[in-house]
Amino acid sequence: MEKTLLILKPDAFKRNLVGEIIKRIEMKGFKIVNMKFEFLSKEKAKRFYEVHKDKIFFNDLINFMISGPILSIEVEGENAIYLMRKLIGATKPEEREMGSIRGDLAIGLTDNLVHASDSKENYEYERKIIFGN
Ligand code: CMP
Picture (cartoon, rainbow, N blue to C red):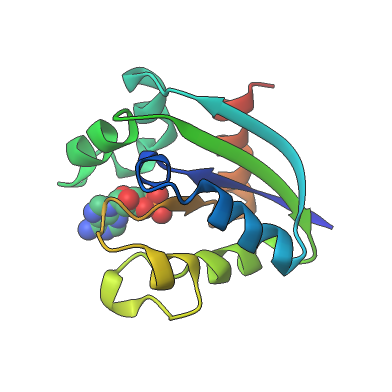
């Protein structure tokens, strides 16, 4: 069994899609093992997305992530990291598969409803920032 981290971003709350997204996670067979609702501070959002700090979209991304609440969900399942990335869909709008969360529900590039860890190392890094040690 493997664990991964999913984050429901502020637009999931603005658009009332929290229940729909959680339903899709559960229907796919992932087991929810931990959850945290919070308003990210600017400093915590910057640490979370440190890997993107030199990108041109960094400031917009941070301002978006602190524009409302987020819900962080740790899930467990077979091949969870890879499968959760498939379930959420691609980052670029034109590459998002229909049937994925972003493909069906997200419109924008920054406001893409969800984030999921893309590797074991990033899961460990992100989990510590959200939940602590
Ligand atoms: P996420 O999977 O959380 O990882 C980084 C986030 O930056 C991404 O989702 C988007 O919300 C945001 N973002 C904004 N512009 C871009 C871009 N050009 N490429 C990748 N990510 C972007």
